[in-house]
Length: 277
Image (tube, rainbow, N blue to C red):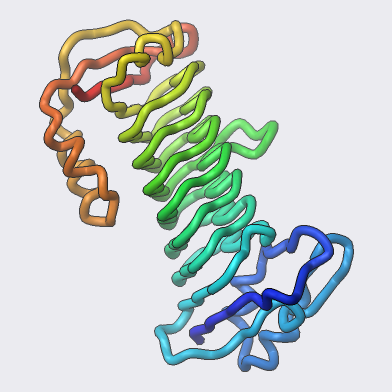
């Protein structure tokens, strides 16, 4: 079934709304009345979904859910999704798309921290900015994102791609400090500027950056230049990202010179940072 949900502006929840499992429950609901009775925690109080939002059935494709309104206090939207489409017209809270393994989540707004944390597959598109720990690992866990694609049109906070194992993260704007911290493998592309400690502890994988005046200061000290090198697969990856909606692909495809840095030599040292200029 297909659903549309709109937040009630007058319904102020007494704390953060815990939305883990909400999308799965909506997918199983047989009527709007059933959907409105879904139980959901708001702070320490258990409410029904109908207390916080208007839920209606639509004629769209199966497993298609659209949310409208301010969901910035709703944490865990799309958490553990395995299939279907979730489209949010508004901001979302923390852990949006956490442990995503299939389907597509599209956020037409800002996204809180821990978006796509420990994602295993599927696709996320964030049309504005997102917070810290994008596609990263849970605290204390050895692996972060292990599959899927996260596309951000705007900026990302600190520690994006921390302990990333597989998958792709593409950031159209700037990225905060600690990008790809202890990265194990995978690909991260940043079209804007970066802050300090890029690739610190990186073992394998690829980071693609655009040259900026502070790049030498921002790279972790365990990287060394290995000369001009442009992988044959780079244009293929950029064209693929272009096909799925990353708006910065054209700009990066037009930058012909590419310098390669190897590292982090203080870790395994088999990673690479490619700098286009």
